[in-house]
Image 1 (cartoon, rainbow over the protein chains, first blue to last red):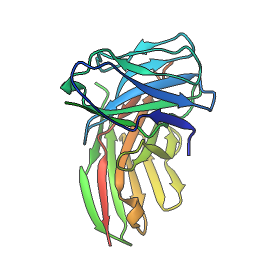
Image 2: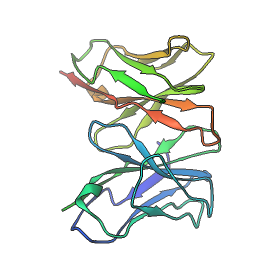
Image 3: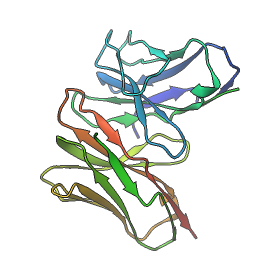
Image 4: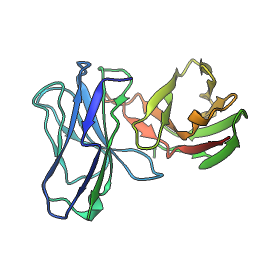
Length: 111
Length: 114
């Protein structure tokens, strides 16, 4: 099993709250990714990073932001959560041209 | 538009039976195709990966095939077990960007009944 971790696994919060979803990997991978997945739907890339101090927006527009201060850490932040943000968020990492390894995901519910 | 289509959307089989899942894609230029297994509430885990020159790859009871000419792939599961109940996702990578962009299918939800 890949060494990539996400916390919290489940989160229920009220509208307007600021939240940070944590993702860390111990494999020393340069590339990291955040995906959003709704039930029965495909994964959509919302952010990615090539390495420290590198962040890019993905295919799906997202109101979240990310940072990459350390190689192993790639947190995702929502400044003001809304019910439309309710979804599963998956973090992944890979070597430069290699396979992506996924974390267990964070299921977010905004009430 | 690069797309990955999977069928069926869902499938129920009895334990011990075989099944085949289908994936059609339009991603170009093609780099590789992966099949992932995603248990409920978990992240996807890779089962197989195939490049353009490979037309079959096995991983235990899972066998994937690829026809790059028709842009079709299948995943065959032999002697199914209850633990095979999961979503199986077809993922195609393109060769047109340094990111090696991944295109995800919506998955086939497989349920194995005892």
